[in-house]
Length: 213
Image (cartoon, rainbow, N blue to C red; front, side, top):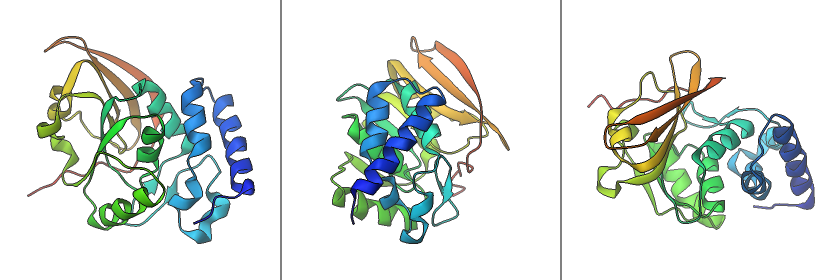
């Protein structure tokens, strides 16, 4: 597993691209420049690693577009030590970006193949989330709540209520909501029952699957 000067140079170009698309937060740009995205993809696709595009990974999932990862991360307003719940570990790329920012990450993945792979892979790169869980993201993680923020990395047809209830007061939920095309949505919990909602335009994600058992 190598991260060469060439890879680092390509990451700088990628950072420049997402900067021109409107990502301003320096610590987010720095995290993107530090995480070796090519290692999260099959070796045959290294040419695609530093393009600003989503790309297929195993289990019919995708590694998100770097701009989207940066956009969601910026909305989370991460501070070192923040307790963050991630719904949809996938390849672990977003998890790594959050770890770079000093967050305590709890991440749930419902595809067993991805869960097993990422659990072994992330520590090899030096990223140690607090917990990786195999399970249904719609339910959140009640036993670890409340969270400073929650990020959903797949398209949700609706906003799962357990996720809203597991936020701290002042906590933020970033979730792409919609069927074919999703609207990136930020919820801020102002009080026990009061949530502020902001919408940030259209994105495309693979669907968030609910456990039917």
